[in-house]
Image (tube, rainbow, N blue to C red; front, side, top):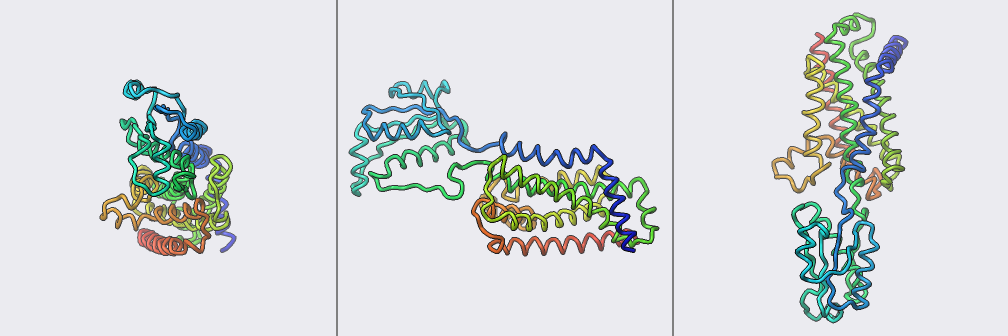
Length: 364
């Protein structure tokens, strides 16, 4: 019996390997998505043109401007007059203008001694692009306050992601998305294809039990997913330079659990769909939208309406992305995300149980 099961696994593996188009898609999509989200799609502050208005170019102002000009995310466009502010912003020569008060040094000194003072720095930002305006304003404030920290006794520290790189946010999210696409979509389509062309009935008359046939079809996709997982982790670490402070072993372990969960989800889809087109639509559209919108991949869960915050609890990617983000960026060990692991394990057992029961019911 074990030999028959191994033969089914070998047969399915050879079938997948011979399908060069499927293999190309399965191996290429993760790489493309990682590069796309890691480099092309970015919420970082990059190449923001900044001009400066400084009636008195004191040593403190020169120090602040020097810090600004040396920052790789800003391009210093030089000193301008107050009359040039509006033309520079309207023409696009500058996206932000920093205006230093004439009594900048005295105002900073008064702030350091606790004496109330009027603002000594004014930021004028082009807010036609809300995302860029918000990011550049926050980053400019941290740089300028840092320049005056010794005098004003004020220090700003950005923990875990001081440069606010988008890859740190997107890589855990794209991992949660990729594994659903590779495992759930490919597994569901593979099983539905067998039913659609009529070869499933031929398999079921073999000496191997139907449940073992299903597992034999899932094992090759699990092996491929493990290869994809290793590829993603290598790309994240060495191409996108995302840290893995919490340990590669913990990240790999929780990812394997998520892979099994995704395979179970694909098996459930195969019991619902009757054609490959329907299986693709359910896997690629119905599953992808909740992952993008309700998992915290693109938008913080806390910003969602209360109703959708509750709904997001049943999205497996939410718990996986949150755990991987904490382990990669914050450097927490896998023990610190035990709650996420427990929820994913519970979802995996429930999905696998329901999927196998529905599949057996259909066969009967």
